[in-house]
Image (tube, rainbow, N blue to C red; front, side, top):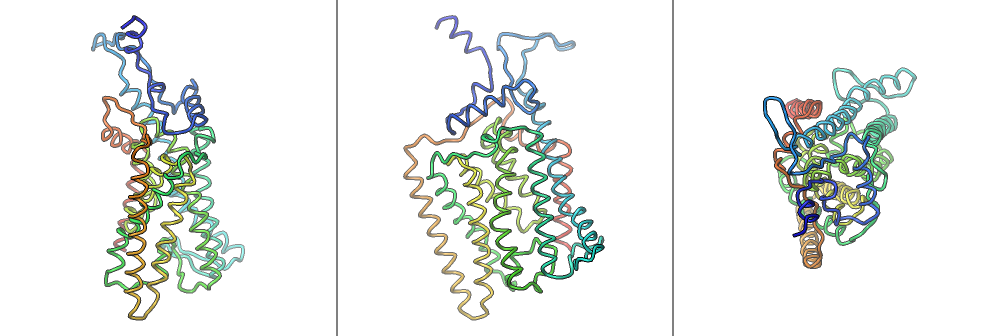
Length: 386
């Protein structure tokens, strides 16, 4: 081995060593360019020579450690994500109450109580209020992370469908997961109603008319799915990718699950978000997690519509529907697996002395991420008890 080769083997450069083969060259070029910016405080750009060491008082000569660099950048990233979560939570609770109170003062027929979560008044006014607050919550959160992380749009929103099979695989997987996670609730002894689809809304939807149902359903299935995909698979996902794709999938999915602050939905949201993120990496397009969210919401709505039927045939219809979806999803997953097994489509991996598990634990313990996460869990507990 010549001296140049020996020297290169002693150099650690996390940017150059990252596996960029999972995406197209346009994305990779922008991602590397963003990571190399000297003024970028969210870029993990550690590099060192294994043979070099520095003198630290009390410790002597020690080599530079990538772990300390990782912790510093992770602290900055998850402090920012924690702030974004706080924006989401405050808007979803406190700002909603003030906005409803303002609407009530100016004569709009919508009311609430600061000591309860319910929204009362005209059905049209309630729907408009919920839509406005949802848009504010999601757009402000997304814009905050975009401005803080300053990720190029081509990196923040993957837009090139490199492998359509990744989209098909993700949709097939979500069909299987939809069926599995809905089996306990579908066959419980509790009475099912179409209103269960709207259980996250703090309003009496039983008084809504058909128009209100239609407007909110379209908004929830289409608009919320698009914005959710852009938030959790956008800037946050891009900055977390520096530490490996699996790390990004787990942390963004965990964040999405916590922000539901509802135990009934946390597991489902985590799994759906993970499948969407994985599908995005496999396909190369942010359209994949959006499509996955749409499919999941349509499945839950279809199940709720079927369960409205009071006849004895309802259970048979529901069972056939769930079985058909499960079979279709399983078949699609197997076909995609067989189709892709010879293709080199993999997830990018980052390995260091700081293991994946330790990296995740360290990240979620960063303040204010840990504080907001605990508030979400307490909120979920309160909702489950009361």
